[in-house]
View 1 (tube, helix red, strand yellow):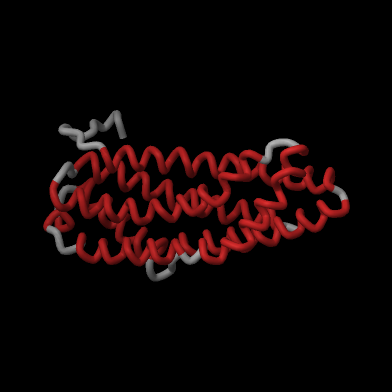
View 2: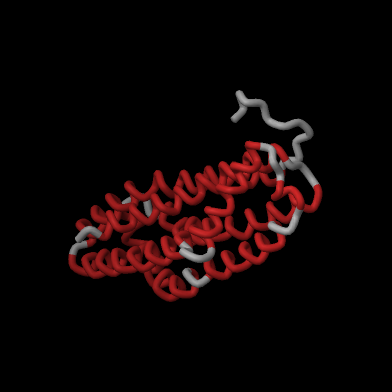
Length: 212
């Protein structure tokens, strides 16, 4: 019992990481446009963004299991595929995080980091803390994804076992969990899309205070 809550807690943590990264990306890309710093920073954003793709990509097939008939037809195959791949998948965020950290080490050498401009100075302090806590030393993002996928495997195992005895009850448990997970996954997709737009946009004028 309580597996669904554990999954929700990890999904919430993943969303917190993405919310902070999105905020950092919005501010930095609105103030620094083009050049080496822009390219290096957004390569870091892209590497970290791949961590979120691991989450949404692996759980996307569940969106097609939206009825009892679909559950009976598709869940066993999804479960088999997930069971065969999830351990490999949860190794990817650490690789992406290592790539992001290597990029961050080089980013720290650029003159923009030493700015005295209050907004950017504060934002770079936030970025440093984000990299330290979520990406490298404490690796909260990779750990949250690791924990999520392992807890999901336990949940899927329980649903699969129940499905052999009572498919209707198994579907009700599945549907209840997926209903609760969906808002978090939708938010990950939406925020990641916005983050990519910020990193790809080369605006010629800084954002105004109203746009923040």
